[in-house]
Length: 132
Image 1: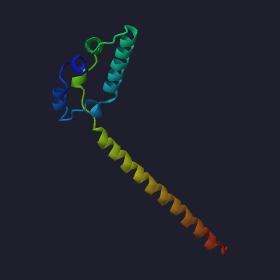
Image 2: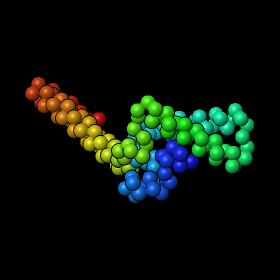
Image 3: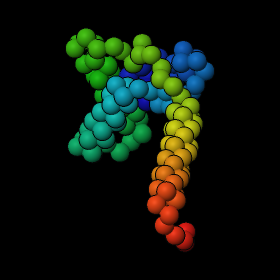
Image 4: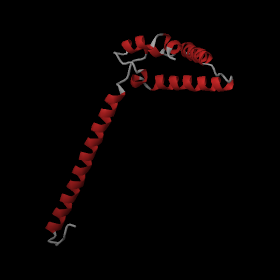
């Protein structure tokens, strides 16, 4: 699938990408968009030409991948194997969870701060109140 798009075997690209064999886990937006375009165009061609055999489907997939690669070259874009790998998706998920926890703590702190200010206001005014 990736042979003509990346112009290399998946294992070789995985080694170049610091040992990750799942290429899309470290792909940036440009690479993901190009892959999605390659996949959708292949799907459309398979449907349009009513390709049923596995051999023809693979050939079509390789042909479309090669054309997408050539288009990227023609417009002067960076070829997929030369793109800088992004952070692994698992690292990004961990960072998001950490940020969510920090936001929750910050929100709870601000809420508690408001409650404390409210209590102080009522004490200064000698107003009786009950916390429910």
